[in-house]
Image (cartoon, rainbow, N blue to C red; front, side, top):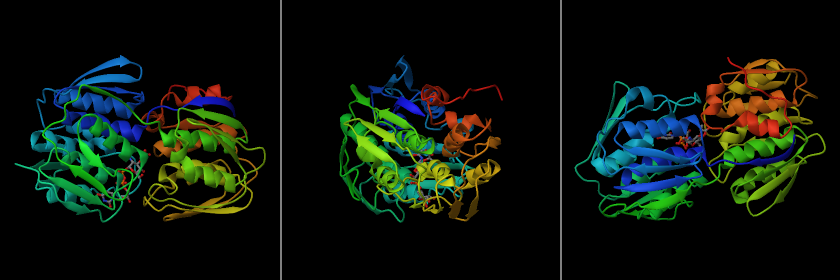
Amino acid sequence: MYGDVNISGAKNAAVAIIPATLLVDGKCVLENVPNISDVKISCNILEKLGAKIEWLSEHSISVDTSHISSTTAPFDMTSKFRASYYLIGSLLSRCGEAEVGLPGGCNLGARPIDQHIKGFEALGADVNVSQGKISAKADRLVGTSIYMDTVSVGATINVMLASVLAEGTTTIDNAAKEPHVVDVANFLNTMGADIRGAGTDVIKITGVEKLKGDATYSIVPDQIEAGTFMLAAIASKGDITIHNCIPKHLDCLTAKILEIGGHVEEGDDSLRIWCDSRPTKTNVKTAPYPGFPTDLQPQIGVVLSVADGTSIINEGIWESRFQYTAELNKMGANITAQGKTAVFEGVDFLSGAPVYASDLRAGAALIIAGIIANGKTELYNLGHIDRGYENIEEKFRKLGANIKRVKE
Ligand code: EPZ
């Protein structure tokens, strides 16, 4: 594949910032919002809670949360996706109570929320989980110190949301450092919050009376989408320039690409990736940022399935994130996945086959596999992909891929 691709706003920032607008007693405008189904679901849920949302353009929305009419999120909607848990932190902060269906989302294994609950209870909330719902209630939230037992993006953001309007100061130790954690903190500070240290292990939040809103915030570029296209360039031995990205956010992947024989040229907000020979083998261990992102694990799995030699991937975050390897094996790959480890014996080429997306990133990986394979691939379960990638087939087609969406 050859050419240029523009990266959209980050899904994992947007699905946190949209619920975070509930903390604003007023209006705000979000720009660089990705046009994806998870964002649309988030907006629909907020409207059910009383928010007024207007799409100002394809990628910007105005959100008016002056009047919140309910603190119970519609179960049929929240159980559809993972990020619904951010409604708990936001509603607890703004209204002192929340009832939300337990999160759904990708089937990556158990997806506990014990660290979220630990944070809410430490701040003084009563939390109850029953009949598939989580209810939280607090007469007042009082700042405290919380040490995360495991590095968790969701719990770090949720505790931040629950602390912004609390009395006193909250310290989150062993905090997640992902770019989208920083983006949520930057959004809240733009609205008048007092959050320091986001992007480091220790985040300090000093409670404020209210968030004034009346501001505009542009969502950070999606480093996982950018990484997906970087790996597409390597898998296809092509030359792709990625625009509207933050190269620093992809340092770990860049290092890995150089290791396997690819080339990277960094611009201020762009990355050019090219590869003119067969990638060589390597080993990958996924870890919290700034380690190798678990959300790019299936995509590099496609590259390693056709690399020269034997590679090993250790999935350090999720229990079950190798479902895609069975699909790649249908295409002629030679991968043995066992628990959190998969061994890739590189093959010369993949062959087209009917394959199924098990989750968002597996789906993106299978698109790359279909593009580089000999023959035709039919990919099913596109709904997973549409949750987090905007116009993905259009972006790949512009890079020279022979891809089209047909009715399932
Ligand atoms: C976010 O999920 C992302 N989703 C995931 O991206 C991403 O894979 C993950 O972070 C890790 O980077 C969104 O941001 C909406 P975690 P999240 O809490 O917050 C354990 C994608 O493809 N844990 O950082 O749910 C958990 O089991 C999606 O865009 C607890 O034990 O992930 C996991 O092993 C897939 N207790 C680890 O921590 C908790 O209370 C990291 O989970 C919370 C998490």
